[in-house]
Every structure is written in C-alpha cells, then in structure tokens.
Amino acid sequence: MLKDEILKELYGKRVVVSGEALAEKFGVSRNAVWKAIKQLQSEGFSIAASTNKGYFLESCGQTLSPAIIEFEMQSSSYCKPLLFFKQLPSTNLKVRELAAAGYPSGTVVVADSQTAGKGRMGRSFYSPAGTGVYFSLLLRPELSSEDTMLITSMCAVAAAKAIEALSRVRVQIKWVNDLLIGGKKVCGILTEAALNLEDRSLGSVIIGIGINCGKQKFPDELANIATSIDNESGGVVDRSLLVAEVLKRIETGFATLPQRTFLSDCRERSALLGKQITVCRGERLTPATALAIDNDGALLVRYDDGKEEALSSGEVRVRL
Ligand code: BTN
Image 1 (cartoon, rainbow, N blue to C red):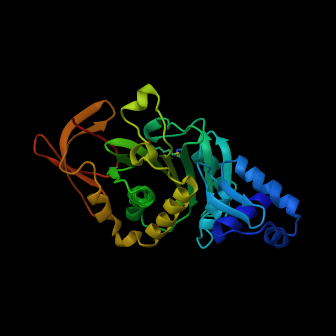
Image 2 (image 1 turned 135 degrees about the vertical axis):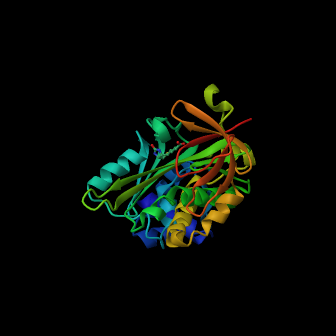
Image 3 (image 1 turned 30 degrees about the horizontal axis):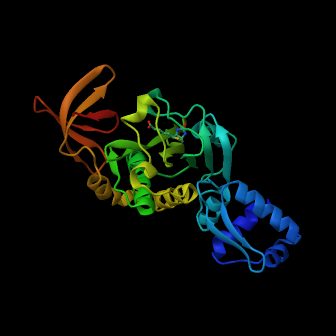
C-alpha cells in the first residue's frame, strides 16, 4: 500500500522528504502522496508538512504499525511473513491455524486487540485495543528436549530487556513467564509446542507475548495486580518498536540458547529468589522458599520440612 511505503521511507530517512521525491520514488502523483500523508496523520502518525520543504515524521504516536515492524525487521529471518490484524480472538490460535496450513518458521501474527486472549492454565489475557501489543511467533527450531524447556525463560529475558531498553524502567521476571514492574504484571508469555508424534521430536513452537503498554486504568479485578509500561515510566513507549525489539532479542536468544548465558539475566531480574513463596499444584498449595534458578532454568525450592525440589514448570506465588 502506498501509505505504508511512504511511512517506511519517512521512518527510514528521518529527514524532511519532499512530496516530489516521494511521488517520483513511488511513481504516483503528488496529490496521491498528499492523500496518503493525510491518511497516516488520521491514523495517529505525527507528520509535519511544509509546503516548500516536504514531509517529516515526528513520531509514530500511539499507533501500532506493521509497516514500522517490517522496516525494523528487514534484516531478520522473522516476520517473513508478518500478518497484522486489528482484532483477533487470539494470536496464538491464529498462528496454530497458520502452522497447520504450512506457514514457515518465522511467521509472526500481531493484533491490536484480542477478544479471547489466552493465558497459562486456561486463564484469559486482558487484551484491549490501542494500548497493548499481542503477538505470536511460529518457529520450527531444532532443539534438544532440555533446551526446549528453556524457551519461555529465554523469551522472558528478551522481553524484559526490550522493555527496559525502550522505557528505562526496571523489569523483574516472575518465573517462568510473567514480567513485573513494581510488583505488578506488565507482560505474560504463553509458549505452546507441538510434538511430531512419530519420533516425539519438537514440531512447531508458538510463542505468544502480550505486553500492556499505554497509560491506562485497569478493570477493578486487575487494578492491584496489573500495570503498563507507560503507567510506570510516565513516557510513551512506541508499540511497533517494542514488538520489533522483543523479536530481535528472541532471535539472538535462540542463536545462543544452548550456551544458556541468558540464565544470568534471568537470575538477576528474578522476582522470586530468596522470597517466601507458595507452590501451587491444582488445589494443593505448599509453602516454600525460592532458592535458585538452576542451569536447566528450573526453580529450586526448599519446602518448610527441609525437602528441596527443582520445579521445571508450574505456578508459584510470592507470599506477602
Ligand atoms: C499468561 O499471562 O498466562 C500468558 C499470557 C500470554 C498472552 C499472549 S497475548 C498474545 C498471545 N495470544 C494469546 O492468546 N496469548 C498470548
């Protein structure tokens, strides 16, 4: 679409570009350029237009833009393709359909809102329009079963560092898939894997990430446990840039996954280590202390009777 091409051009150049130059580059009239600029402005992009000089992209405002994500991901193997939806039931569900239809590893689905966002343990993920990013990545990695268990932790580190880089707030990781700012949840990760039944090897992996971004008031039931990047930083995080930043860090994370270097970042940001926690197994709640994250990414806990256990998955809560 012309407007997306113009947006990428202005975003990439970061200088004033004349209407004439844009018209020439895309083989359209200056009037068509002007119309595309008007459309981008109405979508929330702040574009300064001066009659003599041309157009300058001042900021992307609050707009989530697939064109910007694609631009940022040009040299990545991810986002080929990138599919963007204003609304979906769930990006994980969409990617599952695409995986079955043969879409390649690296396919990414981004939505501006979800009507049935999926969380872990059958929970839902609050996914309103205009203030968050909800995206899922399809991969078909060749990993040992031990390394497969590390995917969620590695992605948690990638997302935490991406948020920190773009907003300068400190993010903690609540093992294994929640990111917190100031003790409240800002991001959730849902990793779903499909096994090849013949040889029990890893078939495809769907990594779904939801991040609360814009300044907002959460519904009463979430007000005490959820927050957003902008609520905590006081700034405005660029949602498109955030999606790209997380994906780039996941891509590097996969390249170095077997070395497990990300585990030190995971430990440094842990919201649990040294804390009194409750290990939740269905109805059974067992008090424990979180001791360490081991080299397999498992959470080492000591129960009150002195027994220790390495938890490789599951649900824990910090005791207040
Ligand atoms: C959790 O908090 O338990 C995990 C939440 C994961 C939410 C993301 S939003 C994008 C992707 N699509 C979904 O339906 N869920 C994940």
